[in-house]
Image (spheres, rainbow over the protein chains, first blue to last red):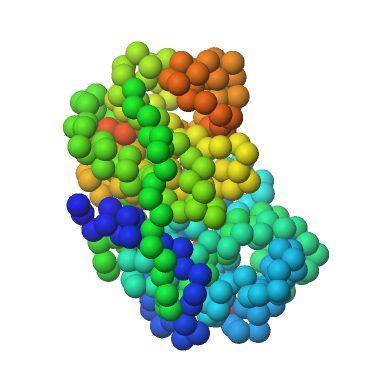
Length: 171
Length: 171
């Protein structure tokens, strides 16, 4: 089995992170990998916001928690959040953004970094608070929130669940 | 740069395939990689239909062509089609299925096989013809078509486009 397939099979979502910050060069390699995801007609509809700033990270966590109605950190203590959004005008936006998320999670794992897709980005960036945040960051245009790829070193990892029966049909 | 990152950066959508069939073991490695994509709450909402059968492959091509309103093979001559669908009942269906597509395309590239995401799977499996096809294959349940990952050996490959400016923001 080659290295790519091995990493695909051993990647797991992490829900228990160490607070330690990731080095910039690791973070940049992960983020760059996201930009190389396939996109519909090669239009590169997504953008990635790399958040290391603790204040913004905690602000996002709070917004997310409110949408979920939960009372814990929905980012599971991860120090870094990569927010993926995609241009609403492009019909493949959700598919494109999802592929970026996939690259980010796998790239992280290949570099020894844990990750998890945290949802509710759509609701977050439909809200006035989310729109104001983009504006504050100088991001113009109309974007759909796709997901948050939270990143950090893994504190504990769960066993992989077996694949379901009938995942694959052959003709 | 590690092998995973290298493969991500060199993967390209292929739109010009050789007609040669792929060996089963290569095809199965690609398909299996798809089943290891992350899914919302680990619910594994997608399914993959691996199509080698020429009659069905051509039938799908025709359905797809009609939806597009084009007069060429929308699968660009690829001998294999992996159809990805996902359980409509699960809210993360489209995201889950997209991650499966991403694994399939990257796994293919890691094994020297060309691939391309061909859209209009949603329209295909919303149609009576598409629903009848699933029934004929013994697939029960209500599925959204996510995409077709067409596969084959590359006849020609285009250069990668440069990444857009402002893909990444840092905070």
